[in-house]
Image (tube, rainbow, N blue to C red; front, top):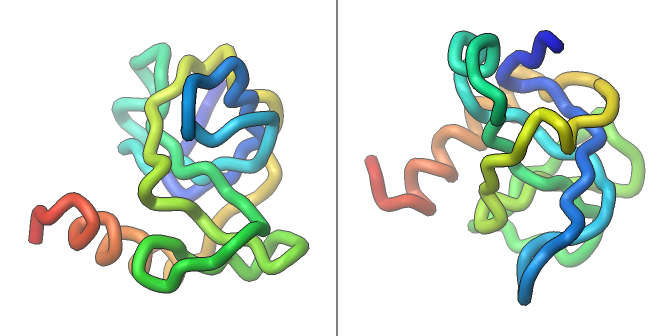
Length: 108
């Protein structure tokens, strides 16, 4: 399965523990496409239409319901959790995600 950075995939996050994001939902792939080609896992940002927090979320215009990527829920998942491709984030959205992720992880 070919999975590239910036793509949005329907992903099964269950089972979870505690405050981890749950259920089957869209997720944005943030791991490098080269890594994704050889690994059995991918790193994703779950997507939600719930409460939006400007400092930690990035709005995604190509999905319904005012959806946004949840940076604090950054998660590496098995490719077995990946169900189907839903689309792709814009370059503007990816740039904002990169900037906010670096700030969130204090790696600037």
